[in-house]
Length: 512
Ligand code: FAD
Image 1 (cartoon, rainbow, N blue to C red):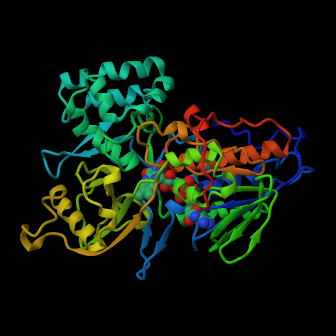
Image 2: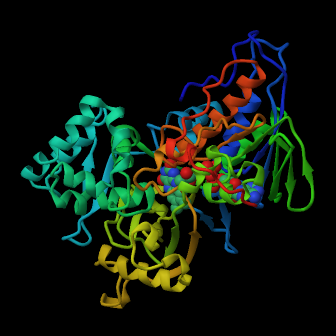
Image 3: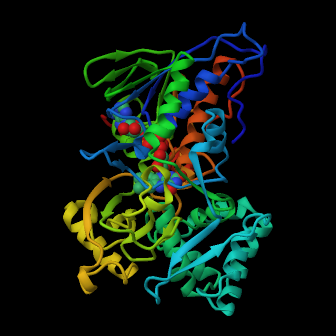
């Protein structure tokens, strides 16, 4: 699936150049448009049509979706989420190299840094040794860490990890029916693996607790995602990634429009797309149509004519998970850790001092922490519906947690009252990545759909990575591939199989 078949070989059935309307200017929509303008275009073959002609239609006034960022009245950047790129994101790394912007990634040492639960203010690391392939490097990093688990506890993990080493991805995929806790119980893993490692990983990977999270997600991360070094972008993604994508697409005949929300997908008698109706009344027609909106929005806008089709009703099984991203500006510098940290606090997931980690936000004197607050609703495993609380309540709860994480720097018990919070920004994402609870993978639909001129994309659609930036880019590339192959008269990968119990149901028609 990672194969970049998007540009058909020069001279071989290049087909016509198609106009393509793409809804959503997040990473999936922008990647889809980028590979559409690339498809069929070849520097060594200038007589060929220069790719397809996408127009990206984004509802908001800025690009990026879940990676979007904007400036407050002081000019400080507010990001939708703290994002880490992994070297093991092949499609994302290719994209950086194709856009010639690789220097914008800031390399971070290949390690995971955990706050010590019993020793507030102290950290311990899982160090990944160079040259050791995944998932052995993950196992070895746990083995080498002396502070978190005892040797018998480490050895008790071996029976659970052996089948993954022997059977590989097949074993990993089968674990989607089990939660992380169920998997641990089946393989007799000690409880402390959960409290020491899995809670932190589950919250970082899908913003939920391990009793909710599919074990496939944890194993996929061990096998694929964290097996290479991590990177942060030098600054906000809107300017440093989305803008170069926009320039690239526009320079090759594509169009990007913001502030144009889709109202509805209007269908023909035969169920194919007639046009996109935008909220302002504008009618957008094209040869091909793509949506890259999150699964919850796709369910809402599904046209009545498609609502009885099992392919689209798979989406009923998928749901976005809430998460909150917090920025805290302090009056002084806190602990100097130049890396992403796993907080291992009940309320918080990962965080980073961006004034130290990130070139654009660098400040020698004052810290700016960016923190992911999760789980933040009962759906995600928490007991409090934080997403419905006020910003002030969320910041207060976060500061209480930070007193524990930074005991020598934050707290009113300290002489002078400790570090003072200068200002804060809270970004709530009520529906972020799809909830990777057990048994969901099989319902993620392929990019190709049963509708002849409609293709789906978005991080939640079927691709071998989790709901992530890499997943979004790959899904956009796969959607472009479907359209490019159809235009060139080449075979596509086909529709993904639908579960028999969905196929056998009869669905009542539903209005959007
Ligand atoms: P989106 O970004 O949601 O894009 C969909 C777009 O569609 C949006 O721009 C939206 O405005 C638009 N849209 C919606 N409705 C309409 C409409 N009616 N008309 C027109 N446009 C519409 N991933 C990682 O790999 N690493 C990380 O460290 C990481 N951390 C994260 C932290 C947080 C707090 C969050 C929220 C996410 C994080 N992710 C991370 C996940 C990553 O951001 C997403 O998986 C990815 O950005 C999704 O891209 P997408 O294009 O599929 O969807």
